[in-house]
Image (cartoon, helix red, strand yellow):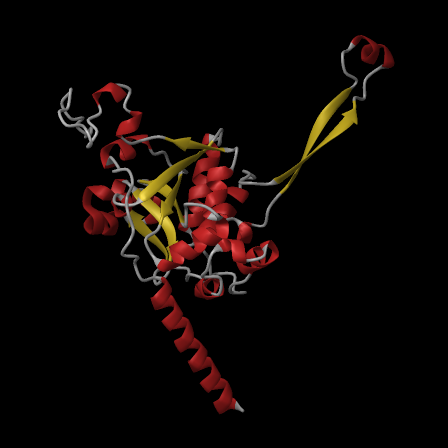
Length: 294
């Protein structure tokens, strides 16, 4: 019986490893639609911002199908937080990344687990910056420390394998199955996926991602004579119901009304003029080409 159990575990491990290799293989057809201005990006980012990434792997395509979104990965920007003496990582990070050690992300990555990455890693990817609106200054370190303490935790590979079963157009997958696929994964508390890890960090300070909000009308508890002179004797009460962090996907940060989309590339340049664009189909440009800001 013990021999059969070991053999079954070994076979399952090989299958998981094979699926992981297939799913994390880069797509040849990946295309970056807008060039990123890394200099402007570094200036625009703030600690606590969420960086959404359109990945170039097969699993990225699976996640985009399942979530009906462009975004398959999420990372939290921590900037130079890890260079603080309290973490004891300054020398090692400076040696590994040089000046880029001041512009770091914490992310959950297959094959690495929760790891530190330089912002430059995603320079050639389609990305989006989502900023938590009104996040209190004193709560930012709490959000950052929550993901930093997870460094080294393993990635939830089983979650990838479960998603792999749905590697075909999302319209063919019943809605209840799509949600069930996102509920699967390891039962071990230390294993994480990118978006759920970040969602838990914001949940620590009570910051919403994409909660279910139910609005109800409630009579105002005021004297009758005040209700007579007021225009409306009722008020709207919003009841928030938190969505489980395990069900948070990268697109939820994009859809959330509590996160602001930050424009950072050359299109956000205040001196940009659409009249200066030189289109490729023009025979003789009327203006000189636009140079991307540095």
